[in-house]
Amino acid sequence: MSSDSAAPTPFIFQTIDSIGEKELDSLPYGVIQLDAQGTVLRYNAYEEGLSGLTRQKVVGKNFFKQIAPCTNMQEFYGRFREGVAAGELHCTFRYHFAFKRNPRDVTVTLLYNAREKLTWVLVQPIESQT
Image (cartoon, rainbow, N blue to C red; front, side, top):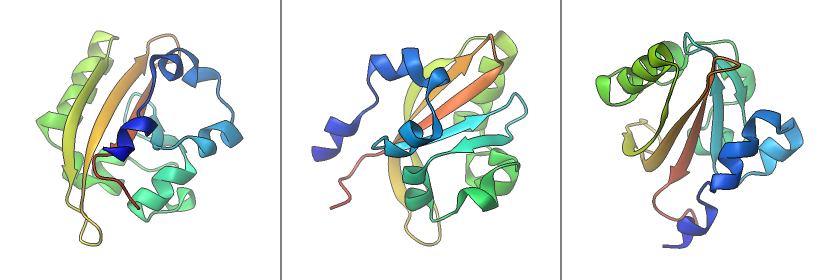
């Protein structure tokens, strides 16, 4: 599958905390940074295109309740809450975003930074977007 070439690499897991906005926007998959309550702090250009939501509409709002309420379930939000509470989270799973416009099957990686108390959400479409 052609989208596999855009998969997050182990290197990105080690460097994402120090990446600038321009580099974040150049990544070939969606990236969302959340605080411990699920508020969106950063949101890259790829994710804007994937979701159809601009960062101006997303940053500062709760991802699970205001932006993507379809994620407010154990499979997604539950993993986030448990990982934040444990201070450790690095998991990857398949997920279906049931957007009214442009529903998507994706691979989601949740990566927690215990030092900064931030979670990265990496979103990669399973099917190629040619």
